[in-house]
Length: 99
Image (tube, rainbow, N blue to C red):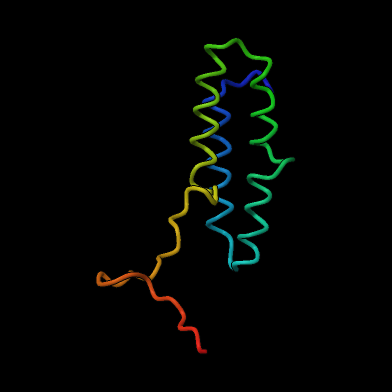
């Protein structure tokens, strides 16, 4: 990582990611872009690796900035798929055994 402040690095990565997402046309391109933005060799991952060499106070601030950068594109931040509501009466359905 350069001598750039971690918050500036996070802002630059975020803006570059937003521009890239805005120009994406297909779902396949978006999936590939996710790897580019969040993969092991991404700029964000390289910046996170540099956290180990920072002093603890700066590391805490930088880690928070990098986590906030990754949050909009992370699969963990997406809402879960909706589930069917369970009926409110009786136990859940169980298959009947035929004898």
